[in-house]
Image (cartoon, rainbow, N blue to C red; front, side):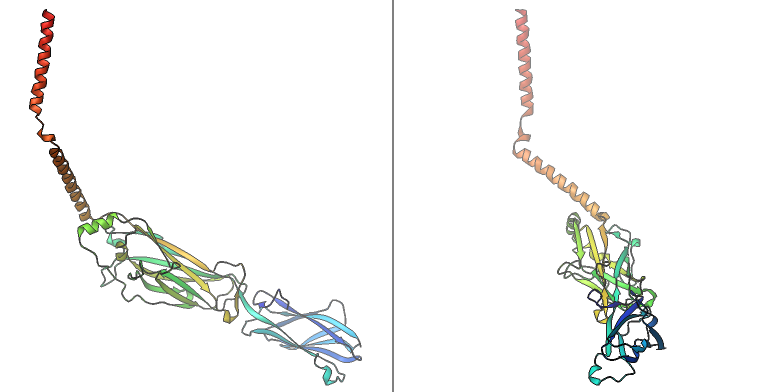
Length: 396
């Protein structure tokens, strides 16, 4: 094992080679053999030597291999090199290490103080190398709400007055391998309040993991229908309508934001396998109506995580492990019928008041006290005098 391959990725390598070097620094060794003990999940493929050196291997048991070296004698001061190749495609990963016990012995008597180098333990860590990713969609991606929107566009639960907007989220977890992902969990964050002290807006009806290969947990909304107290004053209603503007973004990554957290634990996910998480939930539109924003954007975030204690490692520069799903609630900006009537009535009243105010101002300035009749008579007499004078001059 070198620095570039600190572990064996399960499923990524089809076979493994043990490169063996055996030497004899004493007298000629009779009937020299190298024995290999290994996992039963491995399968011996073959022995390979660069050149024919008189080495032959025999599988005595499914996990025990014997290789004869230089039969009948391994010459003094000689050295042999060969490789033993095993199939690793059926490794389950239940064991933390893949271990080989290699022992060399001969028919000659060897002193006990020189036996320390006759046994060798080779091991390599077994790791689940995965490339997990997650994507998500929501339906619908946007919807209208407001007092003039038909109630049939929403869902109303039994014994509740609130109108709810149904939302369907679908999250897909995918593993591109090369190893099987033993376990994983997904954290889903829904922005659940318009303000830090506001009521919860979401009510989860159902959550399903495809093929029942997982389960999800969350804190249930104890009171899904909350209608905020409103001021019945018509002037307050009109003011609230005209001040609805701008966009509000609800994102769990922003500090101080209260979120509904859902955690789903998923079972084993093989290479190139995906698994869906479906979330069916309701959004209380009564809370949205009391907000001053005309557009409310909900940013839902999901992230898939792995348990490193299970010897799982993500490939470097792999697929993104988080996803963002966005939907928008749009106020239709249409006031209720009685609000329109009050707007017209108030507009007429304001117009009349402005007209009366202008009339009073003109009266105060003396506009209505001018003697228009006397001015007209004086102007008429002036014109008659001018005409008479012109006639006298013509007769002269």
